[in-house]
Structures are given as structure tokens and as C-alpha cells.
Image (cartoon, rainbow, N blue to C red):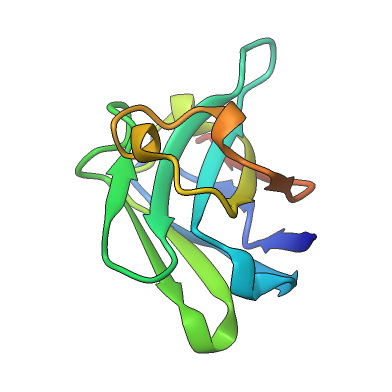
Length: 128
């Protein structure tokens, strides 16, 4: 089992940047990929980005392409989500997730079902 803890959420203004972090512990040797999802109030959970643990392969949801960047530090067992040009519609609880399975379809269309482990989330609020 992999445990995930997110941090870095907060209140920012439109146009600002923010970086989220997710630290993995436990059976981290089994991780194939890690990702970020988000859920706004009253809405379904949405995929944001994913990164393969052992390569530079990434996935981005359409709503964040060009504004968000996912990266990782294997030595620190940490995945980051650098968010830029934030908009009020980016307001959500952001969840970190991990999978130990090599889902090829993950890189075409990231879905919740691809992931095995989840963090508890960190709230990002974008408001003036």
C-alpha cells in the first residue's frame, strides 16, 4: 500500500501561481504513475495531470494544458503540481493519487479507475 499526503493549498487571487506537493510513503517501489485530480463543489472529480514514476511521460487534462505542470523528485518521493494563471474555476479540492499498474490508456484519458491509492486532498481557492 502507498500512502499519500498533499500540501500547498490555499487562497490565491486570479492570475497567481501555486505549487502543490504530494509525498508518497510505504510501498513506493511499486508506483507506476502518480497523478492529480480535483473536485469542485457540486461537481464530479476531474483528472488534472499524471506523470510516470520512471520516465518523463506526462498527461494533462484539457482544462489545465499550458497552465499547469506536473513534475517529480524520486529521491524525495514527491510529486509536484505547479499551477499558473489560476482562474476562479480552478477552485477545488486537489487530490494526489498513485497506481502500481501499467495502464496504457492512462496516458490518453486519465480516469479515477486507473488509480489505487489516494491522498485526503488539499483545498485551492482562487478568488479576488
